[in-house]
Length: 113
Length: 114
Image (cartoon, rainbow over all chains, first blue to last red):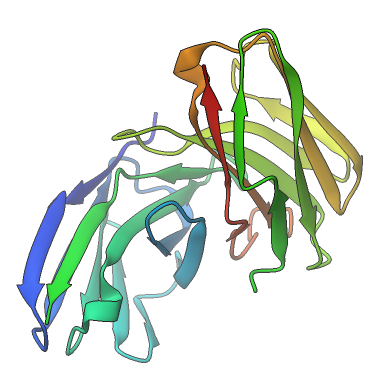
């Protein structure tokens, strides 16, 4: 059974700092990995999708990397802003699970002005 | 604007009530999902519909009853719920298939069972 772990569970940084969020998964047989953002009491917003054949994806100040063989992904946020404060979730689609996502518990990020 | 709309956003119900959650997507997707999000737990997949047919039911109690009348609409009918069913219920949609691409979520329906 696929398990997804995110470290740290919570992170607080000053504005302007670069930061890295970590995601690991136990079964490396995945089709893709997706990073989401969730604001309190709201739904999930897709940030980046990395297919299993890709090593990284970039969108603005966000860069996500994928090392499928080691079961790891990182989300790099450059020049963090208070508006980046949210919970960040990663999720994987396993080769045996169809299009069903397995989620981690998330990292709660606070960027202080 | 996410393309996936959920109503109501907030719902409070007693254990003997019957209510329904509604989800609508305008993205042309053919798969729709219900997820449950409880405090300090990962999102739990409840139901998956592909081309209006239920393809997955993750051992969800029968007090939750999904309905997918067409590829754009998904309902979750609720009856005789328990207080531990209080959670954020999230609807999502995607293109179906193993290269399914992105999952798009609605804003969620916050359910409180008294």
